[in-house]
Length: 263
Length: 159
Image (spheres, rainbow over the protein chains, first blue to last red):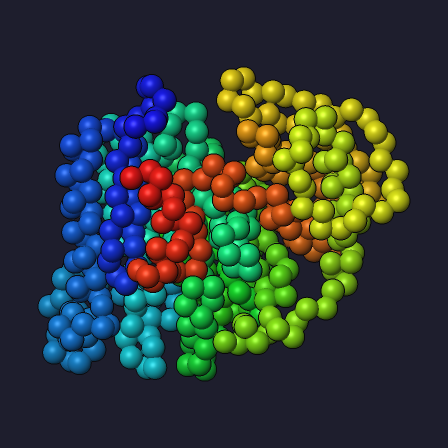
């Protein structure tokens, strides 16, 4: 431990799940109590994967799509996620879609929702002052790691591997999340819900900042599909939400209030 | 794939880049006035500083105690679009952060310029080693991609 004396204890963990890796950083609380809840949070992620995976023949989602189950017979998380996904589709005017090729597929919301849920579970542990959960590149922060230090998230620069395009700070807020959608890791995988084909966009990356990861993850996906002009204007219209967009031409655009969140 | 395509053919300088160059230069000039700018302080010099009247006024400095980090706020510099003032943070001899304290926001064109110029300047100044971050947000990586990610490096440092 090279933490300065008096700094809250840190419990860290990385877990491979949902085809990616979730990184946990929990500050404060009794380490044994934190580890116990961490185990429950990790189990919750695996459970979400088992429920919602479109790759598993036996997931509740797959069986729901096949008509072998009804939502009412699924775990309560199914109805919760489908409701959130429908709300995301409404707010994004259809640019976030819980369907793929006509079939129900809310997986675009599951990872962010699951990461936020895990973070809240950990924040409820007695004595915990700060939680950061990074679900494959989308981060939910709660509280602060130390009394005088806010959480800080680097935004990966898609055109300069290893570099950062910005640093977002959670200074002054108790909840902040940062989600990025882009082509840097897995190519052109974001589908335009209107055409069913890869989104025709001038963007390589959209980063959205706001209180709740469940939403900002969806908004990053939607804004990416919209393209820089419409995406920026739409993000600007969302209260409490800021965005940083990077185009294939290496231009950076951001919403008016983003500067206040940069640290 | 589409994005990669666009990347290849989309290289010409744009009007907005040219328009913002003077603003960026103004800030770069201003940064170069910094008294504590050691040799490690290489501001990315995205635009060569043109002939411009840098006032040469001494910038205000606030030193944070003991941490080896100092924050320097430059004087406001008059650009053709309005006053620009930046604050930089230097940690362990390296520039770790740039924040625009004042910049023109009077008209839509200003906002367009700022939406480009301010973040771009930050981009040149930041790198993961020096930025003192807790985590990294980026396009979703696979389990395999994670092993090459900055987040993985941060995790190994902290675990």
